[in-house]
Length: 75
Image 1 (spheres, rainbow, N blue to C red):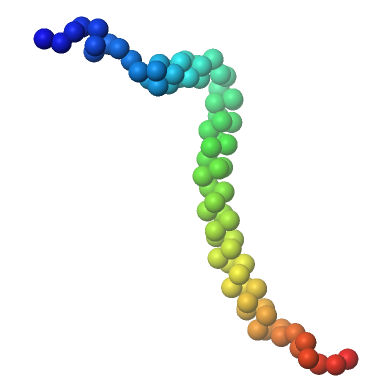
Image 2 (cartoon, rainbow, N blue to C red; image 1 turned 90 degrees about the vertical axis):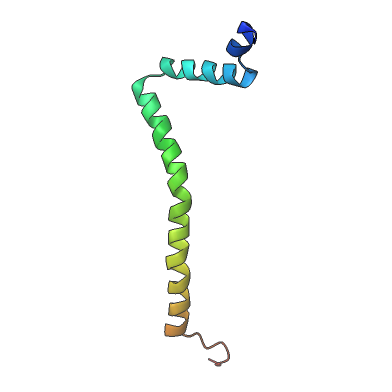
């Protein structure tokens, strides 16, 4: 038979997570909402940057061919 204390013992990591979880109850609802929105903004920021680069670079190349700059022409 196993020891009764062995099943209830928690690792330091579990104790830390439980402590942090308790601290979230102390926060007000607007603070929790702001934290959640900030985390979501971080997730979507990379997607926006990638989308912008996928649109901007081909457009830039297109305009280079549409309006060529004649560097060798003398004025």
